[in-house]
Image (cartoon, rainbow, N blue to C red):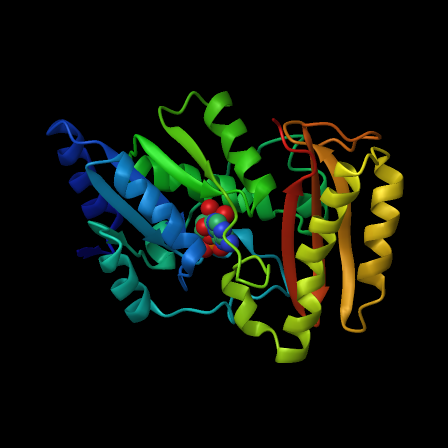
Length: 283
Ligand code: AMP
């Protein structure tokens, strides 16, 4: 596996690969890899001749007072895992490579960035769409893989790629969970054992909401009230948002159907966790 830190070198290398007729698949991450990231790499390995992983903790998507400085980083361990997954190139640029002095260009996706994480984290998606746009220009992938764990992020990327006619296929991958249901996240290391126990309620709430829907409940308000009650009962948790939305528009719905997704963000202690689930299986 090759490690590249220079933007120029990475771009030249990918141009050469494309000219040689090779297909590039790409997995952008902020590192501190877990099985969720690895599932994207495994799928990416199948879909391209050259598998590129980027690790870049992107300051532009962190707000004031958020955890940019503390965000967990371990490039050595990540390199080992990436190599085991068959990554060909690990691209890990420095911040000043990506945002040199005088940097002034940002990508703004309208509307679907407004609710949910966009409402709680102003500027977050502007940072995400900007960095993904830059990474696509550098890596020039044929295929890029993203996790449904960040449901709104995936919707924002799809909108950007469609609106800006970017020649890349976007693949959404299922959420990978710990055996007890907790959605895998690099931020889970922040949790104390007691907080981690309380965090299990997030996935439990989603499972129980699905069960209620399976039993016939379709009223979003009723489902949300039951879910909210369970989260409010946790001593160390504070609900950021809990909504049932249409999978594409991300607008709230009154009645649940196959397009409905329950999305939540909860602070457990100081750690902000997100999770989501479709409520009705398409059969
Ligand atoms: P991050 O490093 O958190 O920016 O995540 C990089 C990519 O991995 C994003 O596309 C995430 O949606 C995806 N990802 C993170 N956690 C999971 C998970 N538990 N299951 C599947 N994909 C995930």
